[in-house]
Image (tube, rainbow, N blue to C red; front, side, top):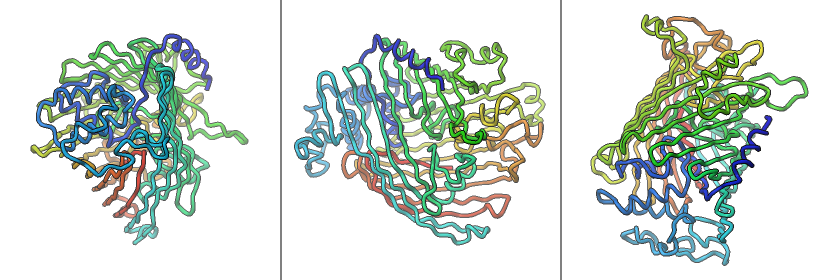
Length: 593
């Protein structure tokens, strides 16, 4: 990639930087605690717009402070515990942190004191603060260093009608070791980096998913959400994982973030705009906040096209690019409206036309004579009664009114839709939270065409051959429910649902589910419907229990039941997964597909 534009922007805008906090890495469990606070206060957070993730640490502390000052209804012991947890995790942004070490938010003694809990350092230099293995704070420099570790073992039992899946049992494991570093320089420049070395053997359904998404032409194995993967033992994977960025405020109202990481637009378990499903990518993000009512986000990314065949002796993966706009407006304290726009394009370098932050991409596409892949969407959410939030997304890939009115199932009517809701402290049970969500995408949504000048995969909505939005790609309908319950250090999480989607009976047939395929070779022009092709229905229940031993150190167990029923009988099977893990400063990965 020709990164001259990025470098120029960095040096130009860094001339007037102001203090800026790093962001909390995307983590479904962690972010749910923050969502609870926003729903509870029955108004949107002042420091961030929650439809755009991740959130910075300083704004999270501001939200915690506002809830503590105006709690509304009674807070539970677990709520006080979460206040303490969030404050400790971003202690550098708590103005009077040292005075809070006696934990005024906890109404009863939690656990016996220890070197982590009492504030006494280990070997004089480590765990001076309970959340950080090593920390250093001076007037000009703030540093936080933490180990990252995830070790889990389990067993996977599958039974089906094919020879491979008949009463098959395999041992599972995950072994990840890494390091996480964050901080600020001169109270102006924030930074974050994470690195881990990983080996794993995944359950059968994840291995099968990797055969469709995440596979290079010369790569026989894959890992969801990862890029380059090597084989490990018979059916395992070995890969490195890394993320890192710098962030600063170019003006009082404009934040700039540059690096390799994931971003997320939405309020649900899934996102139909941009999710954390695919590997981290190179990006530059500009976030402009006009008071607390309006936030405008510009995201420019470089993606990798692993579908393109490489010439002999060439190993450099060709790039493709995406430019995105998202405008978030708090219409009232309880209603938020968002407008999304994205363009995926392929050039030998970044197209400067798409760097305009306030223009419609469809106009740019037309004016330069390109046939790039354009998307537009809207999202809407509302809080009410300090316990409920409803949210929705609508992504439009292509649309023709007359074929839609005729009801002929024209292939050009490509869209995705989401509707969901959250109910916290359900039925007046403290810290019992429920969530329901519906997602669907019509056939051929997110896919695009190849041409004489654009090779396969250069303009579809994928990065490293993995969907940027929903992991199922398109041609699917999904309903899921989530039950969460917490009692201080102990928490339980149940995800259950049904997924219906259509698969292709052969590699050269395209029913519109695999977004990596060229839609020029679609099966038909009319008569298309969700689930066409080989109809597959997946029913699953995923139960997990976690106990936090120390700050960000979790013991957890998991049991998954999954039944896949396909019109192609050899692809029908049932699966049971049981596992136990120790996790330290790493998020739990909800691989549900």
